Length: 556
Image (cartoon, rainbow, N blue to C red; front, side, top):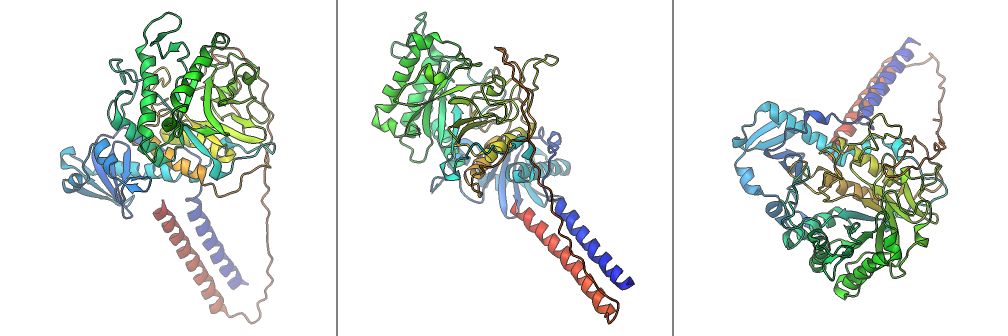
């Protein structure tokens, strides 16, 4: 019996060793400690790990072992032309450092005067960067993501689309990029007469898997494009002229680039029901059709949705239609029209039990777990963003705190919910808004375009998450129940709308214990053989565990 007990003890210890090692590789729920790494940028650097090479600018990272791919045509120009460094020169003029903790070799320019401590910080940040961008599946966002109500059906992965909100307001002499927190990696640009910028944006977005951009005309309803003045007061508007003329230049540029996203327009009459009654909204829709759909070369680039050109219409926040169906207020049969407002989750325009939106309304942005638009039983649209603003002031009864970028964690949580629900369209907000009114701090900032301050972190997260969103291995889930907690429904700043607390349902799976009992006796036992088998089993288990972990780390 003593021999059997000793054998059993050795096997138990082996199992415990395996469990502990693998547990360290399992899902994490805590946010990474990014505070130690985020403010040490600014040095040019190349990092080598597991045969891959990466070049840094601040938090930026690029895979240099293979060329940048634009469609099927390899092209290094995006790195050298748009990001301002020469690969070979940096490789020749560097000092080598190896970090044992991460297994990363760093090549740094001597002029940057790197020391061993700084290199360790860079190596740690690089490892963290890899983890956030390419290791997101380790993080457990299941409570935030919720589950799909049995009422609705997810889109098939091959049918899913990603739209990205895009701004064209950077006009000449308008002080563009003077009222924002970051500067584009490709340099400051104007929306008009910037062909290199348009090509760079097209290539970056297409390579990331973006299907179409949504050009923001949401505040332009008063602008008479053909007479170059405001309908109401006759004033010339350089800002609106730039926004609309630059849109035409995007069509002109991207229609000649084989692999580029499609384009859709986002018009609106925020808070202005009079624009529906007096025809200003219809005039803007007519302009879109005349300028981009009656011209064959542009029509090919216009995004088709549900069989017709997609036209989004901003209703303001809160929606001026209140609780009514906006499709009964205005429509244009030439388009697939979808209406947009902000913070549907705080306007009561959704089902409290399922968080499915009412009517054909898509959300511009949300706080907390996103509401989603449905069309019949189909989950049609969900917005995804990397941060969101607060509601009210701290101490107010309807206060909801802001969520900053948290070094990608807010973005990943938002994506986790979208991947769980599988809408037909993910609406990403935004690429390049660059406005402090919309992005109140550098941390509470939704822009995704690579910048000198944030590098390519949010772009890389977007690219990887789009890949996961469109290549989900499982069939769409249809028979589940929405669970997880919600932020309190609150008053929208511009209007009073209260809602009852959501009914929560929890679906838990009880683990099934499968135990087997073994009977054995002492008679005829070969003691050395039993001990030897147990020791060998323990060793094999330990070696196998370490090999699994090593393989996982190499695959990150």
